[in-house]
Amino acid sequence: MPRPLIPHRRERILAEAESLILAHGFDAVSVQAIADRVGIAKGAVYREFASKDAVLEALLQASMARMTARSSELVGERPRLSAAYRASIEVLLDEPLMVAAFLDDAGVLGSYAVAVRDGRYRERMLEIVRWIAELQERGELDAGIDAEALGLALSSTTLGLLTAAQHLGPLSREQLAGAIGAMEALVSGLEPAAPNAIRERRS
Image (cartoon, rainbow, N blue to C red; front, side, top):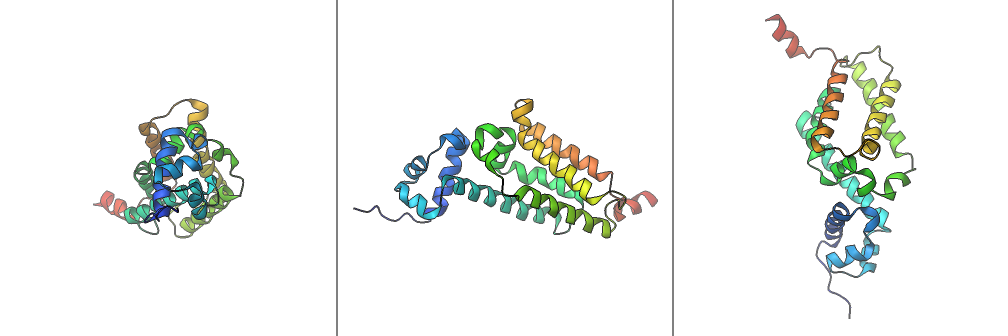
């Protein structure tokens, strides 16, 4: 006899999968375990997601979408570079899976962390390069800095943070926030003073 349909099945799968991954790590979690937690057959998970990797991919994409939306709420659609870093501290720390990925890359993301070879990181770097160029055109970032070089440096820093716990030892939420805050301080040195700050100094 078929099991009854579970309302909001896809959302339930994602919620239970995130809970299991945070508790046990991606490699230790099976599709069967996710199905058991939701109360559905394993085949029902595969009807929503092609693989276990696809479940984690959906979770990470949802986290990124929430972070992007929250950042826009905090700093608007066209923030200065330092403001974007400042906002990223708050929005990142509100996402348990993303925090866990930064603080314990090997344990939480497991084999998935090293399996990503689809060019997404390079595409994100190129998006950052384009954003830097736009900031320079608007006069909000030092035009003397090579946009591609800066984009590479910033992207490499983010990727380095993703593996820092693996290579440098355990990190805390405070250390992660502090590292991002240090990047904010560094990039703010490449920005001209905001108009309000100029007026305040003159008054």
